[in-house]
Length: 93
Image (cartoon, rainbow, N blue to C red):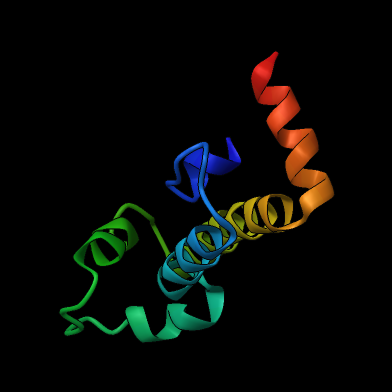
């Protein structure tokens, strides 16, 4: 699942993992949420459209935090050689 979260290939390198994490973090980090809440913001239409699926700002921010937690956990797993080895073994099962 971690490879899917970061949108990576099974044989990705450490640099691929870092680049994917940075890309996802720029979009989903909770601290960037305030910037994306601006109604006239034209960048990242996916994130802007995602916002409109929620009844209020609090639910939106909680969901963004949950998504970022998944991204962060995926990065921590894939960037740690021991955890990555264990993760790769579970994929092989």
